[in-house]
Amino acid sequence: MISKSDMEIYKDINAMCEKFKANGLIDPELFIQHKVNKGLRDQKGKGVLTGLTNISDVVGKEMVGGEVVPCEGKLFYRGYNINDLCNDFLANKRFGFEEITYLLLFGELPSQKELDKFNVILAKYRKSLPNTFVRDIIMKAPSSDIMNSLARSVLTLYSYDDKANDISLPNVLNQCLQLIALFPLLSVYAYQAYDYYIKGNHSFFIHEPKDDLSTAENILHMLRIDSKYTELEARVLDLALVLHAEHGGGNNSTFTARAVTSSGTDTYSAIAAALGSLKGPKHGGANIKVSQMFADIKKNVADWNDEEEIEKYLNKILNKECFDKSGLIYGIGHAVYSISDPRAVLLKQSTESLSIEKGLKRDFDLYSKVEKIAIKLISTQKNIYKNVSANIDFYSGFIYDMLGLPQELFTPIFAISRISGWSAHRMEELLNSSKIMRPAYNCTQPALDYVPMKDRNN
Image 1: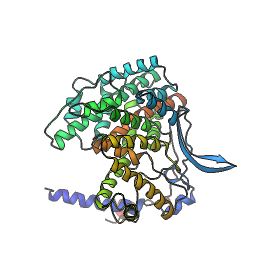
Image 2: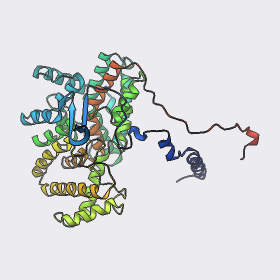
Image 3: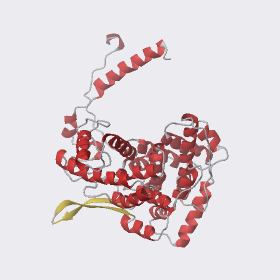
Image 4: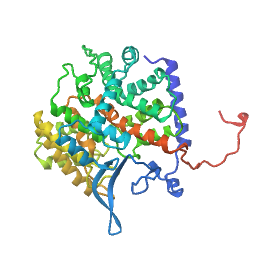
C-alpha cells in the first residue's frame, strides 16, 4: 500500500517532471538550422562517419554509372563475405561460432590446430566462475530482466580480477575471452534463477557446461532439464550466433563499447555499457516484438492461407488500429539494407528446415506470406526513400520460439553472440586511438540574467 507521504513525493516528482519538459523541449526546426544529424544519421538515413574499422563491413548500396543505387545486402567479417563463411561450415557440418569469433578477434581464419587450441581456452574459461558466484551473485538477487542480471554479473566479475584495470592488449584479450566463454552461463543461470524465484516454477537445476560441446550446444544443454537437443537444433542456433556476432562499428551497442573504451576504462565497464545499449528495444529487443506480433496475427487471422485476409490485418497494423498500435510491422526494414538483409536470407533457409523438423511448416509458410505482403504494403503506403526487406529479426524470434527458448533469453542470446564483436572493437579502439570520443552539442539555451533567491516566485 502506498503511504500518504509517498503519494506527496510522487506528486512533487510529476510536477518537477513537467518543469523539465517545459524547459527541456528543443524546437525541431533548430536541428535543421544547426545542421544536426539526429541519431547520427542524415536526412536519408545514412550514418555519420565517426571512425574506421577493419573488423566488418555492411553494404546496402553500390556505385553504378556514377550513381549510388541499392544492391543486394552484403556483410563482411574481416573482409570475408558472410555467405562464403556460413556456406562452408554449414556444408561441412562444423559449428561456426567459435571459428568466427577467432576470425573477428585476430583477423585471420584459423587452421584446425589453431581452432582446437582456441576451443581449449574457451572450455577452460567456461569453468572459471568463482566458487560461490552463482549462489551469491545470481541466485540471491534474481531479476525479471536477464540483461540486467547479465550486466550486474559482468560488473561483479571486476571485483574478482586482480588486474581489472590493466588495459594492456594481452590482459584485455584475456578478459574478453573469459567473458565470451562465460556469457552463456551467466545468461542461462540468471534465467534459471528468475524462473524459480520470480516466476515460481517448482524445479531448479544447474547444468555445468561441457568441454567437448560448442557454444550453441552448451546453451541447449544448460537450458533444458534433460540436456537433450537434435543436431539440427544446435546447428541452427549456431548459425544465429554467427549472424549476430558482428555488424559494423555503427550499431548502437558497438559504438557504445568503443566510446566507453576510448575513456580508458576497464573491460567490464565497457562491456556492461554495451549490454545496457543492447537491452534497449530499439536495438536488441526487435525479435521479441516480431514474435509477439505473430502471436497476435495468429489469433486474429482465421485462414493463414488467405493472403487477402492477411493483407487486411497487416493494413490495420500499419494504420495503428491493432497489435501495439505503433504502426510498425516488426522485422521489416533496416537502416542500411534495402533490397535484402544477407543474414535474413541465410537464416530463412535454416528456419524452414527447423520448422519441418518441429512440425511447424504451416507457421513458416505464414511468416513467408507476411514477409511478402508486408514488403508490398510498406513500399506502397509509407513515404519512404528506399526499398524494404525482411531483416534478421524477422526469422530469429521464430527460431528461438521453435527451440523452446524463453523470450526473456532472446536479447541475452544476442549478447552471447555480439560479445565477440564488442571484444574485437574494444581491442581495435585501444590499439589505434589514444583520444577520448568527445562529440559536440550546440547549446540552444540563450543566456539569462541571474535572479536572487528573494526575488524568485514560490
